[in-house]
Length: 399
Image 1 (tube, rainbow, N blue to C red):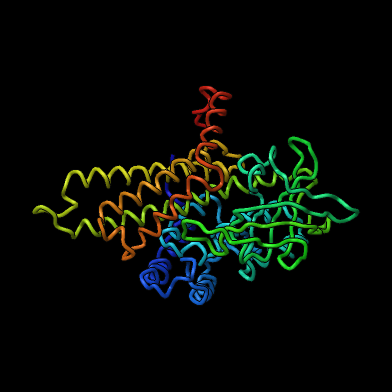
Image 2 (image 1 turned 180 degrees about the horizontal axis):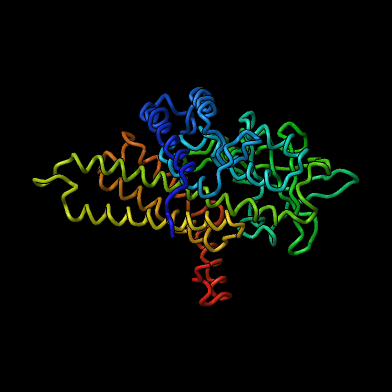
């Protein structure tokens, strides 16, 4: 097995690393760099995005013909990890959720006309987007096929949508939406995906749901649909393919979360490493105490396990495989590792880590959502158990 990155990918990785270190990381220490929701202030974001475009680091996941860089999933893994080292990083390169996953799925399944109307403005950075699937109980969560309650009824060449969604990431600033709604009672083909614009009547944002934070740009919003009309030309894929579209989107999107989280986990240990290298305690540097070394070594090893699982899943996706169990394993491992790494860093930095003098407390609050988003860890463990029961010893097959 050859774990070396291709020269072109490593060049992108090095350039992303340098960009983050020179232009983004220094902003984190200034309170004026943050907006009211603890993310990068728009006035700072816009010029950074223009710079990333000028340096050829914009939209790494999108084909060059559409204005991106055309990287493979393996290439994305290497570069997203680097940009994830900054809490402001991914959005500067147009590689942040939910736009990241929305762009990738539209590139895969939308018609050429739909790509021009709905995808290209997101790629260009002119609009933001959201993916509207999750619903309040008893509606759709981890089981959208069985629990989706938002309805889309066909009336001639239009669809009329009524229903209720919540925790829709980015909806507060999104212009373009992908909506999944029920169109029949079929257990597998009962959902359909649609595109709609923020300015269309028949829907509203009820609230931006307060969370532990910090928030993504646009927050996590609760939406109500009351007669939203969508032309059939804005339907994605075939009628009944909504669950299929969701699976296509979430496979790679779950993995890109892992890529970014690994960078954040590494950054947390970097902050702790700088502190324990200089701090004296009981006649020695903190880094020389055996108990400190155990903590640091254990967290570092967990990150490396997460990197290997993420890269294997990326490799399989590049081969055209679903990589469902590999993505689930990476999602569980990296979500746990992110919280472990940040918690370890705070413990090693003591009161300084708990304060706002470092971004560790920001990371700690952010990290708790990792075990929930794009499928709770318990759901992914169910996937693994069912896969193992079906595959037996072939669960560990090499190829």
